[in-house]
Amino acid sequence: MSHVLPSPLVVDQLVKSYDGKPAVAGLSFALQRGECYGLLGPNGAGKTTTLRCCLGLTAPDSGTITLLGEPVPARAREARARVGIVPQFDNLDPDFTLAENFLVYGRYFGLSDATIRARIPELLEFAGLAGKGDMGIRTLSGGMKRRLTLARALVNDPDLLVLDEPTTGLDPQARHLIWDRLKKLLNAGKTILLTTHFMDEAERLCDRLAIVDGGKLVVEGAPRALIAQHIEPHVVELYGEGAAEWAHAEGGQFSQRIEFSGETAFCYVAEAAPLVAHLMDRPALKTLHRPATLEDVFLKLTGRELRD
Image (tube, rainbow, N blue to C red; front, side):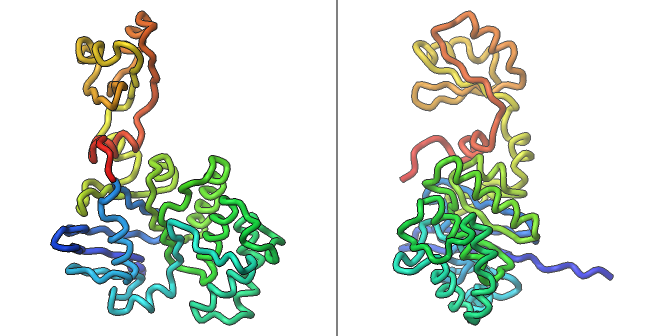
């Protein structure tokens, strides 16, 4: 008889309010072992509050959380000993070397210095910083610091990694290197809970994801399945002089749906060829034809208005 391992994280009907205003309003989801699960949403959607509750840093008003088999917040400390956390902003100690940052962090988990020192070469290699253990933090670039923060989160060999916007502020080269490292962790069987504002990042990394808004679950599923379910397969972005006028007057002949953002019209179509051919006779209108993406799903379900 096969033994089914429990979910690394189960959140059931989580509720948390501040000053009578709900930040999380009955949110439920569960992670599967070995997957990357994305928690996406606009600013103020409740993602940070949800993470804090899951880690036992904020007490929920109601609902249940089970983290690596432990009830949270009752046994959050025991559960966090098996979790690696990469915060939104790097919190490396600038007065220590790279190796000393690993040592100090590892002691929080009760690891001996000998155990930590044995792991440092492998962790530096993972971060692309092999042989640089004696360097000071202040000498590192932003991308190097981010990679080091990710490697530091592995010092306790965690069962679950929680990544809060891990590539914010990084250039494309650094982002791709972080993605490569995360894929290696997934291939090694690690489970990842990811929050990000980069929809391309979620589309690349996540096996499944949830879009939340107003503290509630809007939709959940695999990225490609959500795109196929909620968005027409092709998008033609139209901008330039007269774009809005054309979209209002003629766009409906070619498009299943049209959205506007500023001076750009987004034409969502099942077949793009007729629309693209039609627009070739209107050189004043600039166009971009592309496949539908997770960002289109996100904007359709949460709106295009700016969130502060």
